[in-house]
Length: 304
Ligand SMILES: Nc1ncnc2c1ncn2[C@@H]1O[C@H](COP(=O)(O)OP(=O)(O)OP(=O)(O)O)[C@@H](O)[C@H]1O
Ligand SMILES: [Mg+2]
Image (cartoon, rainbow, N blue to C red; front, side):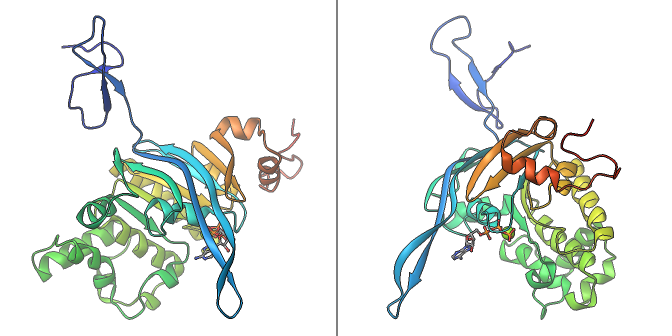
């Protein structure tokens, strides 16, 4: 049967369906496609303490009323200067930092209210890749155990052999040799370490990954390789990304939708091409002006 546009039968997993009270389609449900991730009015404040008694004297409003959606298979680029709150947004969404207020819904579930097994189940689907692969990988563990740890914690492997097979296949997926499993993080270059971080993030087969400046600690020549790997993985696995960067050149290459952040707030948010063509906020214009033009005779702002 063909369903009228915007209408689906009850029970479609991807849809947030509401009943239509009257009219010709009363027995169907309206298709209100709820985004994969829905963030509303998120605030994360940190206390500032002072004095011998370490009393709270002020609050840092690191995230100050942030809202956005990310759909299945989509990348939202979050760009802004150092200290504007990008990492705090990423970690708050995953509940790695407890937000002060607001709501985060993932696949229609309330992430901030989730605890215990429900939070663990959500965490399997929501992962993070860190900026600095050197400090995010435990130097005392072999790569086998670094990538395998989430599989063991979530009880997803029955034997040592299965663990090794899964880890080796994840390493291959991230463009690393299988033999890397038996080595330690310090034996690899920065780009290779980031590939190991990516393999670990993929271990639990997530749907959504916060990529927190995944290339900014890397050499320029390696940055493109890691971005290409993330793009390939997105295409093959249908992943959604929140891609965080302070570099507009990277963001505009990776994302079709961009949110510009300044002092804890999103000051501009929209389609990449619209923002590049016609930035509204003065801060976005400054970020764009800092992007080097391939042709030095042209400047991005005011270019013919
Ligand atoms: N745990 C914390 N306790 C207190 N203040 C914090 C904490 N984490 C972050 N902050 C403050 O919150 C603000 C935002 O920090 P955040 O790390 O989110 O910025 P960012 O945009 O990711 O910066 P960068 O580009 O340098 O990574 C900063 O002023 C920072 O000092
Ligand atoms: Mg950061």
